Amino acid sequence: MKSIAIVTGASSGVGREFVRQLDAGAGGPLDELWLIARRKAVLDDIASGCRTPTRVLALDLTDAASFEVLSRELSREEPRVQWLVNSAGFGKFGDFSAISEKDTADMVRLNCLAVVEMCYLALPHMAAGSRIINLASIAGVIPQPRLSVYSATKSFVLEFSRTVDHELSGSGIHITALCPKFMRTGFLDKPNDGEVARKMCRIGFSPVDKVVRRALRAAVLGRALCIPSLDMKAAHVITKILPASVTMELEEMVLGLWEPMHNTPRG
Ligand SMILES: NC(=O)c1ccc[n+]([C@@H]2O[C@H](COP(=O)([O-])OP(=O)(O)OC[C@H]3O[C@@H](n4cnc5c(N)ncnc54)[C@H](OP(=O)(O)O)[C@@H]3O)[C@@H](O)[C@H]2O)c1
Image (tube, rainbow, N blue to C red):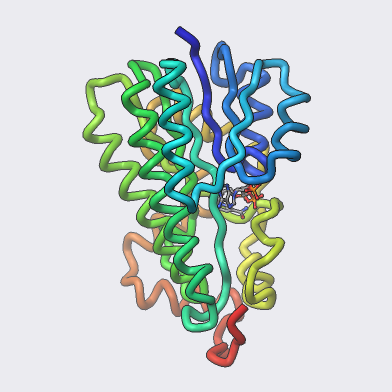
């Protein structure tokens, strides 16, 4: 039986780095890497640089039909899924009312629903030692005004991951919710409100390779939560003590987000 790793969002940023490190053997021996994202040409290019045999699945994970394709592939091959990394995701910055309904719905579809669908499909093909890493975010741990829907989707990922991980106790399968701060990836290319994004990025950036290394280590150890940077670990502890309203006010003060931005155009 083939041992495989499935990585969504494999064409860019965090997902691409997971592919690089898994291909280099960081997750143990693999017979195949399955790469998922929409841009086939980019995936083909990444696949051509991998030592591990790869399968490119150019799928839009906001489209329900994509999961039928994947389900068929899994039923046909009956592989052992050793790794599932759900990295596909995006976020739009700005006041809730300034973000289009389409972007809002797609954020929920991709960041939440696709993660659930992927876990449904992969779990029957997993066994003791298999691991799932779901990309949440520090925005899922600390409430983020002006990133409200994104922040809520990442809270969903965090809670979904840790509750299912708990249900899996004794199976030898683990789910890790990864909660990084900002990283320099395609994530910030189309932020909706660039000014809000710029101010929020004042918390600083983590290197993608370090985040992925820490996530793989946490997953191997069976940790349900991975916050890869020390400053965000500290912020997490503080937000457990403070009421959410105080946390959000402090955040706005520190990041210079005080002024109301209710006139931001939909984009
Ligand atoms: N970068 C950060 O600051 C940061 C911080 C915390 C958490 N995160 C989370 O990390 C994850 C990865 O983001 P990133 O930083 O690597 O951003 P990125 O460079 O923009 O990568 C996003 C990936 O998602 C894929 N994708 C987007 N829409 C898709 C769709 N409809 N169907 C299938 N794939 C889709 C993209 O590929 P295609 O365009 O080819 O489809 C791309 O591979 C996301 O879940 C994000 O929320 C990022």
